[in-house]
Image (tube, rainbow, N blue to C red; front, side, top):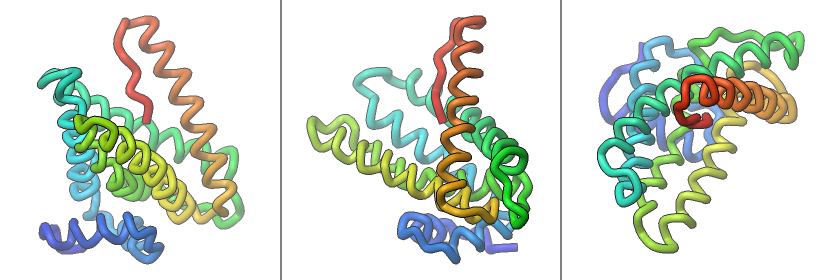
Length: 181
């Protein structure tokens, strides 16, 4: 099991941000990396909350953290289901833990949303972080499910659409906001 030190976490986050495939593979195979993935998800949610502090205050941060964790878990399971049932290849082999770990770390670029409160620069950095997050997610899915980039993109799209539909139904029934993935 990988050392849970702060430096190991930072090194992995840098590797993911650099799109370093061996880092994704290391995270995928390290069953002890789940707590680190949770730290990345929570840190990205806090960053988004700070970036939007003028809009939502402290309740936005708390809601954002809870929404980020729930959507990360649900999205990871949706990706697993779609990727292993509908878009699988003969090489596709994974478990939900692998996707939770790699997709958790894929949120690293979302830390840029911390600058959201800065006029103009904030939304530019948020856009860059969002696009970068999509790229890290595609690599996470591709490596975790042992599939091509095209299949990974398709898996993410189908899983996101399913998550969106479920979220909209949930919002309509219970009157709560949908956080996306």
